[in-house]
Each structure stands twice: as structure tokens, then as C-alpha cells.
Amino acid sequence: MDVTLNEQQRERIEIEHYTASLFTAYISGTGLSAIVNTAAELLGNPVIVVDASFKIVAHSGQEVIDDYIWRENIRKGYCSYDFIAAVNRMESVRRGKQTDVSYEVACEETANTKLISKIKVGGKQIGNVLLLGGKIPFRPRDPELLAIAATVLAEEMSKSSYYRNAKNIKVEDFICGLLDQQPQDLCTIRDRMLSAGLKFGTQLLVLLFDLTRYENSGRYDDYLRERLQHLFPGSPCTYYEGRIMMIHDGPLSKELVRSKPLQQFLNQTGITIGLSSMFSSLAQCRIYYLQALSAIRIGQILCPGQQLTYYADIQLYELLSAEVMSGETHGYRHPGLLMLQEYDAAHQSTLYHTFFVYLKNNRNMQLASEELYVHRNTLRYKLEHIGRLLDTDFSDSEKMLAYYVSYKVADFCEKAREQQQAALYLR
Image (cartoon, rainbow, N blue to C red; front, side, top):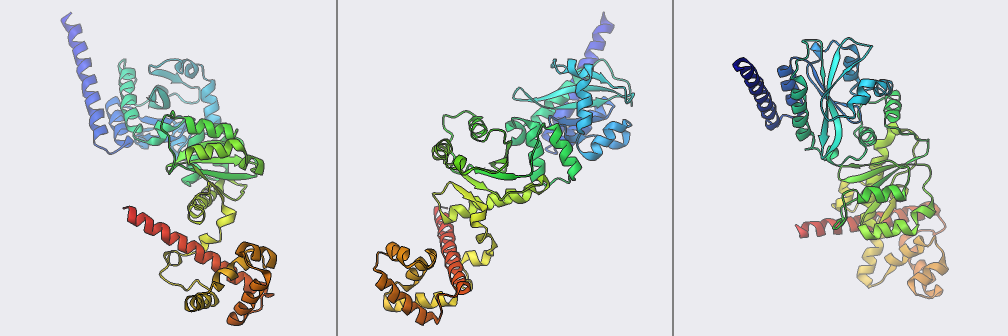
């Protein structure tokens, strides 16, 4: 009886020591690798952490892993679609998925037995921790010890908003991998896309939802995701850098963009949307994400109340340098327009604005006079005066385009400076 008690005491002391060592690694702040390496040292076998998207997020030293399949998985950084499909067909895995305790898996390909424990955050499985047998045989207490490691790993992984908020980790990890520009060739992208259960055509758009003005009081956590999936069915999305990013497959119809449900959603939430140009290769996803981001940023400068902006409508302004936008120089202004401004200041006239309205209306006298609330003869007289001051011919389309672009750039820079000054004032 005393011997049995001593053995139980030794086992309990070992478990307490194991737990304390793992939490010491956790509180050290050095991340998953410290916890995994500590667990591997105490368990005497290699440890690998795989998230729910089958991405390898941490592992102990590769030099002691003799399982060639897992060595290849670690080298690639993720598990292939064929590997995942084969694992899901295994009876031991199917049984293990039904339990919350650690379970053993043996496969025909390699002699190594695996011990697996689920990693859960908020009751949701976000991954698995694997103990690879082979170096030393598994001990009776290893399942309990691995479960403790899974608990500590869950605490560490829950620090990431990605694992806390992800709804469909396979899909969202695939999209985030594209945006993070993780090294991926087309074969890898196709493999991971299949693993996530996704299929895309060749007419893709990035929709980016800016949450800066989002008011979520009284709404549950998944409100936005569910509303967006309802508005854009079949378009996968993920939280990324404080925004929601969606990949839409196929042209975005004007009917959808102007639809009452979408307009009501934007008005209710205060969300603004940036839309990229169309692209065909997922390998370019990061480029078009940045386009959508620019559409939001520049759209808020040009039209602060506008809630949906196409990149194609603002791409001219993205060519502007930081020096131009800061207004430190007027070199971007057409000298003829500076002349008109100086003339207006000296003579209390409005030639600068008159010329802009005329150009904006595609040099249509009738439309310009109506917008300016002046008679056509009055407008004609002013334009003749402008022509003499600028020594220009209004029939020269190239010159007129140069004037109009200068007007638009000047207007944009003025609005950008006003926003910058307002932001500084609020600080």
C-alpha cells in the first residue's frame, strides 16, 4: 500500500513539475516555441503544433524527428491537401475527433505512433498538439501531460485576435497567408485552397470593409460576419489588420452595390468599403488588397460622407508623393491656374472657379452656365478673358486635360491638409 502511494505521489509531483515548467515557459513571453521545446524536453519526444488550417505554427527541434512525412510538412510549413484527406480517412482520427482527451494515432506510412491533444480557445478547437513517438516509448501519463501542454498552448494562442475571432480557420488562414505574402507558389496556393474547401474563378475583386466608424453596441460578435455573408453569399472573408477583407468571385453588379439592403447596412454601421480593380491570380491578392485600402483612404479625403469607393476612381491620386500631399510646395499646380488665383485675389473675381466648372462639365457651355447660375453670354465673356490671361486655346484637349488634372490634384491636396490639421487639433 505504501509503495503504491509513493508511486502515485511521484507521478503527481512529476505532473506538478511538468505543469510548472510549462507555465514558466508561458510567462517568459518568448512565445509558442518556448512552450513547445519545454514540452518536448519533458516528454522526451518531438512536439508539433498544427492549427485548424493544418498550418505548422510551432515545433521542437527537427533534428530528432525521424518521421519523413512530418519532416516534409514542417519544411513546407503546412500539411498538403492529400495528407489531410488521408488523415481524415483514418479510423483512429475519426474516433479521436469525438473525444476531448488525448488519443493515439498510428498510420501505415510510418512506424511512429502519434499522441494528439486538441487545442481549444473559448470552447472552439483551433488546432492540435502532436507528440511523435519513436525516440522513447510513450508512458501511461503522457496523454495527461500532453493535455496540460494543450491547455498552456491555448493560453498562448488566445493572445492572438486571429485565433480568438476566426470563424473558419482554414479559410481565414488561407486568405491571411495570401495577404501576408507568405512564400507560396501557384501549386502551394492551389493545394491550400483545396484544403480550405475554396474554389475561385478568374474574375476576382477585393472588398475591404473599414471599421473605424463602426458602432457595435448591442450587437453580438458575429453580427458583421453574418450580415456580410448574407449580402455577399459565397464570398469568403476574414478579419485582417483591424478590417474585414473579402474576396469576391465575379463582377460586382451595380444592382448589388446600389441595393437597398447594402445601403441600409452601411448607414446602420458607419462602415465604408474600398473595392479593388479586377484580378485573376490569387498570388496577386496582396496588391489588390492595398488597392482597396487606398480606395478607402483616398475616398475619405475626397468625399468624407461616401461609403463605397472604387480604386479605379481614385488611382490618379495614389501617384501623388507625400511632399505634394503635405502642401510644402505648389509645384504640382499648373502655373496658369496660379496666375488665375493671383488675378482673382487682386480683382475680387472668380475666374479660377469658373474655369474649373467649365472643364468639369466637359467644356459644355450650357451645363457650366447652369451650375454657375450665370447667363451663357456672361460665361462666354469670362472664358474669353481667361483665354487671354492664359494665352491658351480651349480647343486643345491636351492643355485642357492638364488644367483639369491640376485642379483635381489641388482640390485633393487641400482636403488632405484640412484632415491632417483637424486630426492634429483633436489630439
